[in-house]
Amino acid sequence: MTPWLIASDRDREEGRPVTQRLYYADPACVEFEAAVVSCDTIEGRPVAVLDRTAFYPTSGGQSYDVGTLGDRQVLDVIELDDERIGHVVSEPLPPGTTVRGRIDWNRRFDHMQQHTGQHILSAAFDRLHGSRTVGFHLGAVVSTLDLDKILNADSINAAEAEANRIVWENRPIRIRIASADEAASMPLRKEPTRSGPLRLIEVEGFDLSACGGTHVAHAGQVGVIALRSWEKFRGGMRLEFVCGTRTLREFRVLRDAVAGSLRLLSVDPRELPSAIERAQGENKELRRTIRDQQARLAGHDAAAMVARAHQVGDTLVLIDAVDGWDQTGLKSLAAAAASRPGVVAALLSTTDPALVVIARAPDVGIDAAVVLKALLARFGGKGGGKAELAQGGGLAGLRAEMLAELRELIEPSLRRAP
Ligand SMILES: [Zn+2]
Image 1 (cartoon, helix red, strand yellow):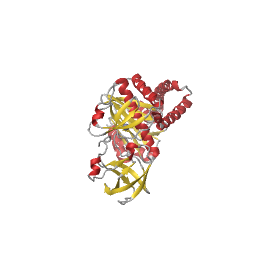
Image 2: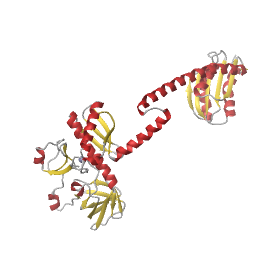
Image 3: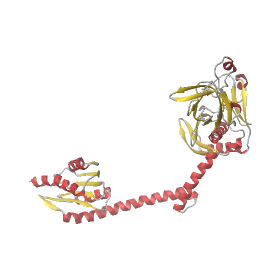
């Protein structure tokens, strides 16, 4: 597609259907009348072609307009080829009839603000840093601009400030039509890639570029241009930016998020990052303390539990459900119990689904991984481990049945042992 190429008079004279693009000359046109030239089904959807339209089709990084044609909803607008614009409508329109079209102005104006902002931003980066725009996408929430150079934060901030200076000077933005020869002698920001008449967008005294999109008439209508974030991308930079009403929406989201955080942390906005860093450090410290305390408590509890364990052959067997331990704690507890010679410990949590840890002393002839595997086969869940220690989680069923199964898996082989 060549969005900035003007449909030639020759096509019209030769009778090829050509959609006159009303937005080329009048981007503020909201309502219009047009004749329905055709209405075909494309990919299962009715697509109407008109002799003229104010609906913008997706092209040049800018998204389509929505609105109505008569009592039909316009759901999408596509460039069928260089000359015809297709309107995807909710119900077919009879060819030969006249319809009244109306575009959704809020959506269009938003696109005009973002798109014009992009021109000004691209020109600012070009003029200040010799950095060319190599990509643009107007997104539903944020837009992206790709630059061909890597720039630091100061350079990026300087270009953002320069772009906003142009916005606040409220410079006129004009649409000019030029032949390829005329355009060749003009200071275009980007070389046009095709011959033929060109539609040029001029930001007075600042930028001139070929474009088929829709733009505001005065730079001030862009409101404000704000860079949201940036990152290195394909040897250059990808910037995320918002303009106009989107900037206000973005500000409100950030304001509420920051205000909520400040209330929780009782700090000044500028102190927020260091306050979060401090809280993270304290959190890490507390986790370490809890881990240490758990290990000491596990040693203490394990000693008491081993004292209650029963003897099977030469082995002390501890099979029990214990309360108030997470996976790590349960593991510490079982490992502490099995740190004494001649002990095997199989501990279940009282949670649902259940956790399980099986541990044994080096001198006990039980394979904890084999016991775990058999237990999981019956009660479900996941886990793994080695012969000395295995752990699992997600077991579903009655605790008493799990304990009985563990006894059945562990005790008979100990009885048979010499
Ligand atoms: Zn444009």
